Amino acid sequence: MGSSGAITSIAIAIIAFSLSACDQIGIGSRYELSKDSKGRTLRLDKRTGEMVVIDGDRIISLRDAREDERKEREAAEQVGKFKYWPVMQLENFRAEVGLTTVWRDGHVLYAVEFRPSRKSGSKDQSSTSGDKKVTPQEKFDSTAIIQAIEKRKFFLIFFDVPFELAREELNFSRVVDEKNKPIALTASGRITMSREAYQKVDEWNVRWR
Image 1 (cartoon, rainbow, N blue to C red):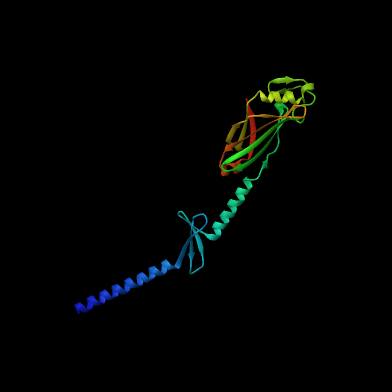
Image 2: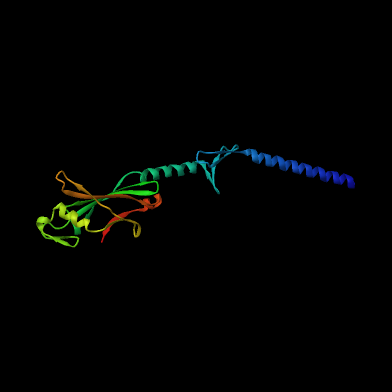
């Protein structure tokens, strides 16, 4: 009896091991792994046909992954378009300021233009250009206005209201007409900023000192 019982126990153990091994082989052969163009692991379930993306410690359905990629492309396309911000009136300088921006590779590229404006300041009274008083006759003299602006340091500021995201000092270049008379000032450059931060920019301004 002792010998027979031992043989039976061994047989049961062998059968259990065999079943376990078969089960493990079945689990292993259920999935097929591959790589996509981004180096992520793709796992195909041969039983259900479901495919998921293994990205680090996350398992994402292929449908969700494609949706994420679509949103990513749309966001990249949006920030990659030139944005023309509303023109700002600088009453103190009788000038208007225009701003154009675009996001590229971790930077905001900007172009600013200051141009004398008849919309800024009163047409009937003397006004100040920065600190300098000007007469009505001088009011729309682009040279006088531009010279007053050039005497100051100007800064371009981006906001995610109420937070300031970036501040950049502007370096001006003159724009002249055919008579070599200055008619505008321009400044361009780039500011380091993530795409996510740029998408949050909802206001801009200029400050001077």
